[in-house]
Image (tube, rainbow, N blue to C red; front, side):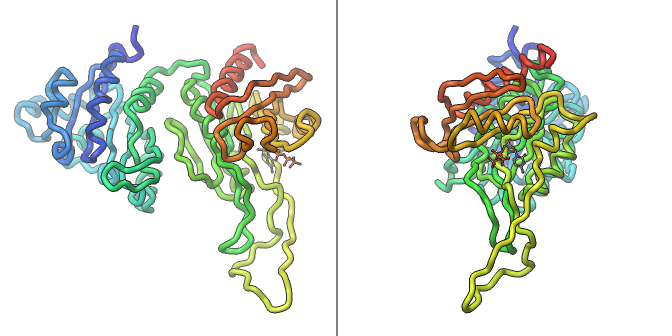
Length: 409
Ligand code: CTP
């Protein structure tokens, strides 16, 4: 049995240069067993032809809301009802805006408004358009409406050679996201996993802040792996320059206190993983105006301690996640410091990594792609994993979490 056997997927192909990749997506979905019904928007027809989409889908593609043949038995309602999942790929800024407002002026819009099926968007647009406040607003609205996203990825744009976040996810990634959405199984199905990731920024004045070198790569990779394993995932991310992981509800924060609030809002969870490099201190007072250079003196920065989010969640009575996992970024005496941290913070596991760069092949963990970790568990067990890339660490950690939950820890 293939993963998408007996599933009908309506694929809305939007008008963007990435439309050509959607032809490959049809193939990827069909080879997993799905029946694919294609809707080509008027704009998409400038990039690909209904004929090529029909040939690959193995049935005629739909393209016009008022096609007499299709609409005589209310075609858009039929399409909307038949779908187990609707994928919009590429999802342009314009389509996202239409969806956010519930506009139904063409077949794609009508199908998207009439459906009860889950909707998966694969956004693709110029990085400036993706970053525009209007697009951010529409995206936030769509997520609130329950729409899922995959990508966009960062990389070079086909049309302008510009680099940034905005490239459509690869067909394989979209097909995998569809599998995930429709499978409802996987070792973490039915579980809620909460993850913190990235650095925090602690403001000094409106233009300056205290930060650290965390890239968020490890925490984001764990969020992706947990979603792939079927979990409902909430990721609370500090400021990072990497994309939100597919199929994950991502909450963006700046400071430690905002991170703590977002974590509290996301509870209850079955598993909480604290991969963020939270700033230990913040300036005691934040100046409302930019601090000016004054003649004859240096400003002094008075610091105060930030709340320890991991320790707070670990010490919850009722409402404590069943498994609480911390990270320990250490530059020396890893075992000693990590074991002490495990006891001090009251968590169940500590994933310790040596961020000194000694003993890793690249010499840099923070910001890099490789990691070598040792897991210390309450009760004294520990295991060291060989150096691997951060997605490898993420998958293995998720496997370990799944078997711990299964064993009833
Ligand atoms: N952590 C947290 N809130 C804080 C500080 C840390 O939730 N205010 C979490 C981190 O996400 C990580 C763990 O605690 O999972 C350990 O972080 P680390 O910075 O290594 O520990 P510290 O308590 O800051 O200890 P130290 O800086 O003395 O090594």
